[in-house]
Amino acid sequence: MKASVRALFDLPDDVKRRNTDVIHGSGYMGFTSKNPLYEAFGLYDASSLTDVDAFCSLLDASSHDRETIKTYATKSHEVIVQLATKLAESMGLNDQNFGTWQCQFRINKYNFTQDSVGSSGVQIHTDSGFLTLLQEDECVGGLEILDPGSGSYVEVDPLPGSILVNLGDVAKIWSNGLLHNVKHRVQCKAAIPRFSIALFLLAPKDDKVEAPTALVDSDHPRMYQTFFYNDYRKLLADLELRAGEALSQLLM
Ligand SMILES: O=C(O)CCC(=O)C(=O)O
Ligand SMILES: [Fe+2]
Image (spheres, rainbow, N blue to C red):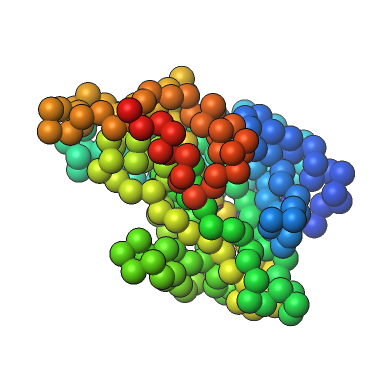
């Protein structure tokens, strides 16, 4: 998969830009002044083999890369649905169907050079969806997680063969505040290009996010208004609030 990912980033700029948005911000992202070292492809919806195929066709992926990306998407989608199901079961919820939730791939490249060592690869943010599976670069570190207790960053060293799991804004809303969205960033530590692959389980297919009634009672009143995930993504982009601050706008 990493070889297929590298092949995608080696494509000419005009081909990369064929990967346009399906939902807000879901397509190719080129270098920006805020994240000048970062570029990413986005595949929406990664739970649909038709969409995975369409993504590969747009980018003229070879048949080998296409098979690799399809297998990776299918298997990692199975894992993320299993994880979300177990998480819900651990909270006493046995009737959730995460298999039908919207899912997005984000394939990240950090164009790190000698000059960029010490600078930001991707600014501090929370993931906007429910659950994230992150396959980190096996060699190049840089991911840092904010410890809310101490206010300091904890470095996540590369651990080949592992998958990192993260919770986003939707997890906080959906769990009525039981689960926490995690602030993180990527710093440039070495002059070596860095690749990572993130799979985001975003929100229900009908786009409506609300805590299940089983998590709401008189001791735990509903914390957040019901909202549509796609509207929330637009709100984040419009307000340029990336680190979970926009959640306060949804409080009851
Ligand atoms: O590249 C990484 O390690 C983190 C990527 C990330 O935070 C994201 O894609 O949301
Ligand atoms: Fe992230």
